[in-house]
Image (cartoon, rainbow, N blue to C red):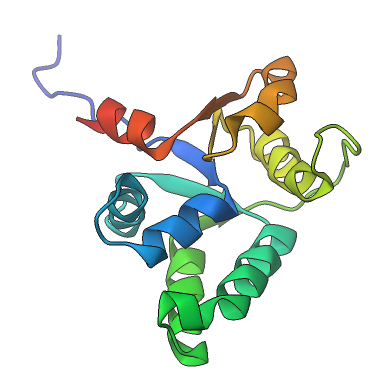
Length: 146
């Protein structure tokens, strides 16, 4: 019997755009803490090209609210890309969710075989349960990391 303790792999998630936005908007919430957990490698994210483009669109449209320049948004996205596991999407499940823009998040979660989507919009992601994917808030994930 080995005396070495096995190290658990960090959880892999899909990060909905609203959580990324909230984490950049305020340094006081769980979204901000989750972004730090991602940056430190305590949480892994799966990312697709369509979701990355959505991140960029939302952040650059709201950069005055977020008090970020174009180059600062690019740095945030570059850092996320450096931490992410990129996943190509070969099969589309559309339409599956009430908001068509959320379908790309679910499709990524299915393709990447992650067990969780982290969002503030759980009600629109109810169909994710059919795929064995839990929809949780940043707070729930952070409590699990403790």
